[in-house]
Length: 164
Image (cartoon, rainbow, N blue to C red; front, top):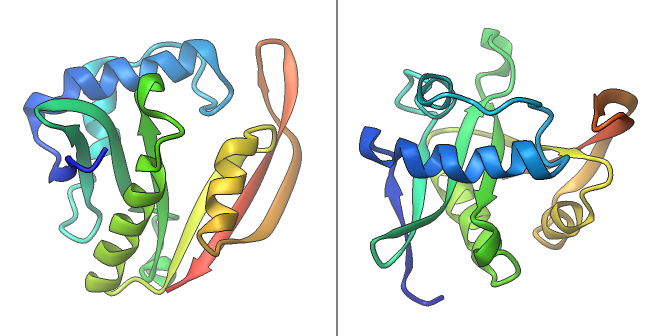
């Protein structure tokens, strides 16, 4: 996957981003959305309206194989130095080191844009994401028990943070 690159998100990428995200909505607890999202919904997620909060298509050649986002943690001024990190990959591209590269790319972008803390908010049963963030130096900072319900099951949420 040496040819994987990160390209700032464009409107034309949204159908592929929706395809990737909607797969996880329907087939996993990686997201707590329960119904497929429209292109308008996806647009609202990836385009924050701020030049500091960036989103990227992850491309293998010309194919979009994932996306990554720096988004606001909370919409209050005191949190301006904190961003949430999100990465989703086409299921055919998981386990190939692309997630690590995407997070490192977001960390570099975050540092360049004046962020101090990055947060990952993860379903408590998503072991692969938890291990990935731990491997990259993120530390567990919160554990919310049974705060989500999907597929008829109560689910925990954990947060991991990294000071950059």
